[in-house]
Amino acid sequence: MLDKIDRELLQKFEYGLNPQKPETSAIPAQIIGYGEMSTIFVIKVPGQESLAYKRLPIFQTTEEMDKYERLFHEYGKLLGEIGLNTPPFDVVRVKPREGNLVMYNVQARLDGRSIGNKLIQTLSDDGVMTLFRMILAELDKVFTYNESGSGIKIGIDGQISNWAAADYKGNFKIGTDTKLCYIDTSTPLMKRDGIEQINPELFMRSAPSFLRWLIRLTFLNEVMTRYYNFRRVVMDLIANFYKEQRPEFIPALIAEANRFFAGEGKKFNISPITEKEIRDYYREDAMIWRLYLGLRRLDRFIHLRLLNKPYVYILPG
Image (cartoon, rainbow, N blue to C red; front, side, top):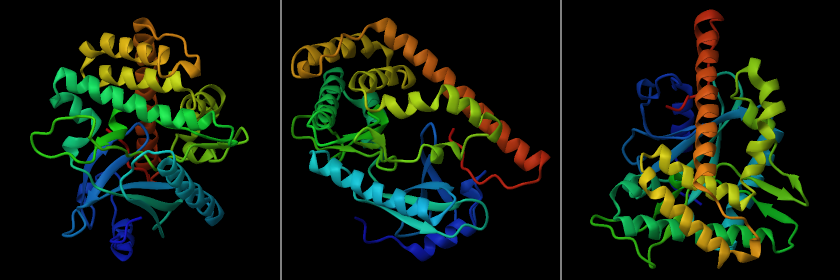
């Protein structure tokens, strides 16, 4: 848990926020990261730049917020119990000026150079492979727990940008003593007795209204289930190396993943991954997210320019 969140400052920040250009808000923000669905930023106030924020303007009732908050803390606790490290984190409710109710996911900020997608640009070839093997070992903890018969299954987004070296310093070299952190704590995917605990409609709130029926029909179930499938999570992780402009590692990563699944991960009975699968997976995934973001930008244009209505979401780059 975090003990240095200035909740009054966060409320003031929300009231003065410019979602289209957060850096020009009454209290300015600095974007430090993008995801497919959200933007990560710091608030540019002395003493507050050690915290990273993710804004969630997706709730319509306090009951929805209550359920999300309970699930958020349960998910974080479970990650710790099965052996994953996470930075200190919390959630904070604020009153929005207009639109949906808002919660902020707040997390202790790590050195930007320690995040996985940055590390693979600076580590040696052996270091990149060591990082990949360490992530496989962390994922193994999750999916071993999911097979334990507890009735609870945890979903995890294992993409490279969701991992960080918590003990990163200058001249960093990765090794078996490196403390690896999982940093995507804001999406508490969890099934209890086969039933998804988070309301998938929450993710639909930021989608263009004219597109929601299509997403429900063709896309939502696939997105909500892929993070419970060990093979799909590893495929997504490997495909990230296309996104991060390091495709030269992909053959070695596939070979290492298949070695893992044939050895330590044999209990999962996972079939080998092929390079064609990774290539096809990335092309389809990239096309879907490009289209989705383009339609969200169109939706923002419609709100702001044609309907003269506020658009409350911060769009990723």
